[in-house]
Amino acid sequence: MGAACGVPAGTGPRGRRSGVSPETDPYERLAAIAEQELALVSAFALERVGELVALAQQRTTLVASLPARPPASARAALARAAALQERTTAALSVLVAELGRDLNGVDRARRAARGYGMGLPEPRPVLDHVR
Image (cartoon, rainbow, N blue to C red; front, side, top):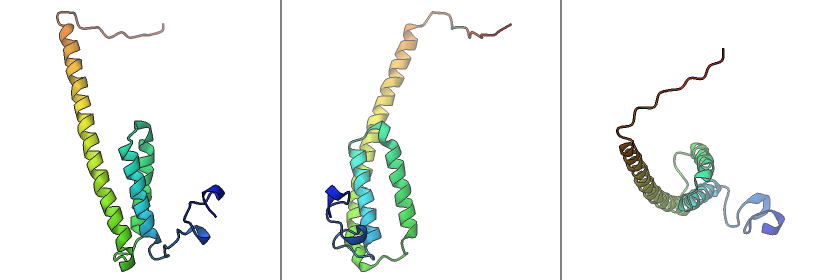
């Protein structure tokens, strides 16, 4: 079984990843979601925001299903998920700063365009109506 069969490489019987126990599987899935989020944020495209929202919903549902105290065997997956989340947060901070600069540029351009229109009468609203 492998990717050619539609099953990810390293996946064992019943869709489980090799070396992943039922006890650690949800934590491995949490780390996998974190990897996907980082990939989407790192290659940010506005048209893919819906995918980020879907991943956030998956993460929320998964976290709600986890026990209050994770098993010790989940430590590696949780550490990986936390490190990935830190990187995602940093990448999002950079994106927010870039978008803020872009919006400031748009605002400056709008004010400049208004300045060129000084002295012109205010445009009157036009109402279309049928008699």
